[in-house]
Figure 1 (cartoon, one colour):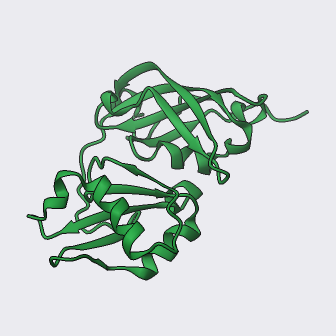
Figure 2: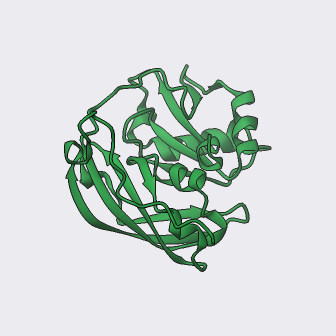
Length: 203
């Protein structure tokens, strides 16, 4: 699992009728400040698309695990906040992924340019079928080209934000170059036909 995914957790607020659901992000920050003031408060809270009430992006995987060990967080009035790691959500659903997109990730930092990191940063809106391996030898802030598999291209954001351990961020503009049906990239045996050609072998 990528470094990016190991920093994530999904926060579930119970009961379903809890007033905190009206503003779950503010509620979660208050819970951490009150019940776990010794833990790192440097986290990014996001609106979930599938799981939980809040997506929590901790600064480091170690920060996430420290919070996991302290739960469940029980608040006054009988409410509870529980964190679930990325990949361990109880309500996983499967949707058809019949759309492919050729996408350019502009100004991509070279220190994050590994296949694992690229897959990790894209995993919240699509599966990475291909990474153009030619991008691994290009200069810093060059464009990375990928082929994504998703339910619908509207899931692709206009930009990605890469967050570093020192709190700084890098904004990566996203450009959709082409969208097509997955069936168009299957051969006679139903196997995916790669868009990108492997780089030539060194002489």
